[in-house]
Length: 571
Image 1 (tube, rainbow, N blue to C red):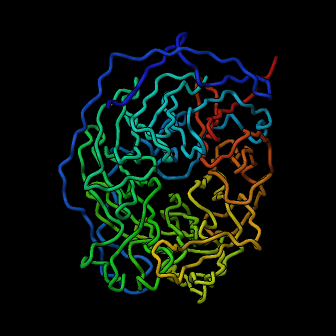
Image 2 (cartoon, rainbow, N blue to C red):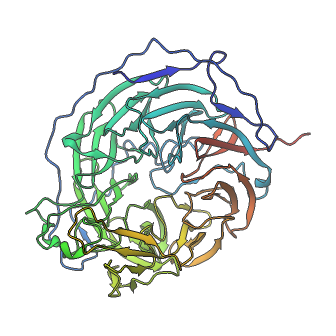
């Protein structure tokens, strides 16, 4: 069965967007019409030659926080850094730029005029719900992905240009696409990577993941002419494919096979886990690709896998040319709470302790904020960014948690703060080079983790949120190099960590909220400047872009994508 794709022309198309003028009730006019495009062809998959996973662990000392694995490339490596400094009018990748900052130099919308923002258009995605995808924009075209489908729309008006639907349709959440040269890259629920012609949605090539690995819904990362995808089965991994041809390049696995270096950190148990389900960050000067890995398996019963369980719960640096591990840092050794270390990794050059260094910043689900030297993984600073944290008494000089006994899951249930859902989670933070603040959505709350004493394999284990420990969400601004809280904003209504964030040169932080509210905050003070209610849940992260010298913001909410811009001032 061939994928369906269509080009939709103005005047004869079924329009799925809603244009909005100054009417806050969002009552609008709709246009219809659709014609199928007959001129494009569907390409057959091109298969890359299989090669063994390239993996190199250094034999770790117990408790070592980081380990340099191979020599670093400190110069050159600038080729293919398209998203590192894209045209400010575009948003070509999940985080906008490769550094994960989610910061835009656009400044038409400022703290002074944000009150003039209004909804410009709404685009409805048929059959979608709870969309987690971040749209991408290139040259005035927005690409939206969900359920094995990509819609290309006019980013100024919301008019549809073309649509691609690859069978089978699926309810698997997809968190976005990536644009590189003339192609749009998407991952599918059946573990394929598809390259579409950005002009018309025709399939340029399609490949299945190498070796039977299962790709997650994370948006692809484009580095040096390679498309990097992440996945979670049989264990966490990333794979690279040639961006032009789809030819397979390499695989890196988050855990070693039995007998390989690193397997000794599993106490004789089979290494399992380390799911990777977020996009990566990239430094073109160092030529290093950064990803986070998830929890070890079994998740809750740590007694079955004694040891640190490498390379789960780690931040890893990978050479994108070879797929070899350069260094790792383990945030939560021997995790028993499912605190994945997959949260967005933010790359910043800043002074810390009197010295300008290449830094990597992460607010981790375990409740600690980390600052590493991204050249070698050296731990520089770590501090709690939530007050409800009771499982560790801080971090030692190597960044290892000083664990407080008694917080492992139990048959009766063990209350731990933060909960398994985390002090934060996958919704993206943002960093502003103007304020030098790291902004992150935070959940103050606890959970109860339990295991079963039953011999029934279906009896289950898991966690529940603690009923007597009310949850509260915040947006917090942290000093990026000290981790100290500068200000916090309490959302209008939210009891969990909120969606992702975005900062701009206009001095604002664009802040969606869990229950549909969209708020713009002053980046320096946290003062709310503007509100809008989408009427549906928001779990995604926002973007900003410019078309015809007009700045827009966009966010997925429920089954729709909303775009906002400044209201025109009448002369």
